[in-house]
Length: 359
Ligand SMILES: [Mn+2]
Image (cartoon, rainbow, N blue to C red; front, top):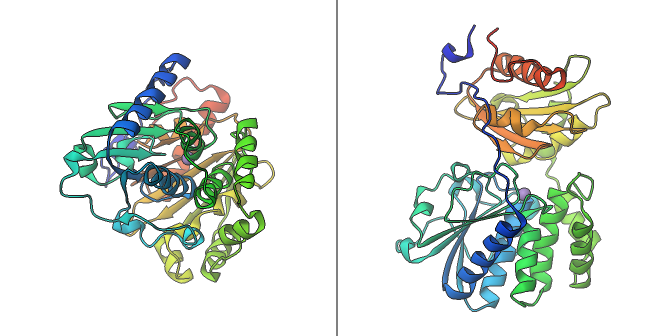
């Protein structure tokens, strides 16, 4: 079978990833200045992030909204209907300014996309019609889709960039903003465990604690208010673990029926991938979740950096970080497994053709 002619295909033919642009320190500083100029000069801001909101996206949205409001600006957070209500673990954060409809006069608003590696990761086309479009992110493979692209791949999380802007604009770090930033920081660093846990990340944490973050109370909100259905779903996933190639690939697939059985939704699957990556011998952990259309949302994690999972994700139209990435695919689980094994082998063993080899 050749992937290019597989039925139900919608152009998922793997492609060789384009080389990533290098951005000089000067260019990064220039982009930062452009963002600061817009924040200082413009008066109306519509904030959005990638669909399937995670802690960094939500925390960054709420913190930037708080910052803009403190500066006397008008600000709204646009969250698509599919992402509302927010995942339960983030509902304790102040939901001020959230709307699910873009304003009719969006051409008068400055649109800020946060934590969004490509504009396709947000399904609201109206966002492209803003007066200005600012792209603030830390994904190394950000597609630089906006007029202003402030993409700092060395930031542990997008919230770290917001934290820096807050300093520069001399805004007060209120307890509410500190809390939102802290949620973003701990979720994107895996509670200070992933390679993006830089000294700056810890300096930021220290300052957020000084600003009033109650660490045990916040951890309890984010990690210890789990609805039972999340653990039911985790149990189903753990019962369906598959391992390939000596355990280098650890994979679990959750079908739509599994979600029904657990009475769970997609956001309830957050965290399952961390259990998979923790299994000894794993180089790449993958969790695939079937959605209502029969497509699979695929999350990938690399344990030791030997495999760049963002390269695998980009081959099927997704993206992410070297050690954490994702994509959506129409491949069946069997096809997906074959594709992943081939891609991992190509990276580990230097197979000559990294783009797709028909099987
Ligand atoms: Mn992020």
